[in-house]
Amino acid sequence: MNDYGNITEQLKLFILEKYKSIREFAISINMPYSTIDNIFKRGIDKANVSNVISICQALNISTDMLACGKIISNSHSEQYSNRRIREKREQLGLTQEELALKLGYKSRSSINKIELGENDIPQSKIIAFAKALDTTPSYLMGWESADEILYKDEISEELTNGYHVPLSQKEVKLIESYRTLNDEGQEKIIDSVDDLIRSGKYIKNNTVGLDYEKQA
Figure 1 (tube, rainbow, N blue to C red):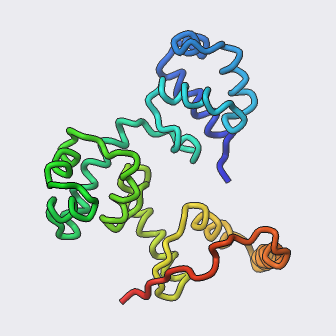
Figure 2 (tube, helix red, strand yellow):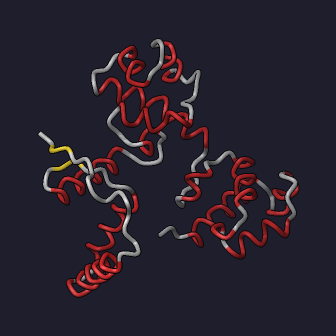
């Protein structure tokens, strides 16, 4: 679960680093001071989505990452993505032509311009780039480090006995939290999950037939 109280306070401090006051910031983005003040009192998670988007655009920070509890500038993401695409491509021994083919581009020039920072990755292509480069969107965009990716891979392989089953950030956090509990606490977690499953009310429709790949 995201600590929205913490990220709300971080956002307030971030604004005060750039503006003399919250009131000055409100005037600069043509938003009533009372609206922003109310956001900080109630929490960013209870704010109107359009107001959050306006604030993020004014501060040039990622709305998606704010929702994940992080303040990341859009320019930071673009800078990381250009460099990391090139690095991952070279690590995999792919040419620009081969990567372009994987992603459906007509020529290597599109990949070359992205790696040079002349073009940004289209939002619709971020996941495709991550899959083609055998990594995650978060790593490509600079939202997490290689060590964090490796840690998730280690947890995934340990959990699944050698089957490659990518874990989401929520799943990794759940495992980490579970491991902090004593035996009694872990048993309570297992019992609670069993109760949820038996109720049948919370089962996904796509939990059967997952495509697991046995690693060599």
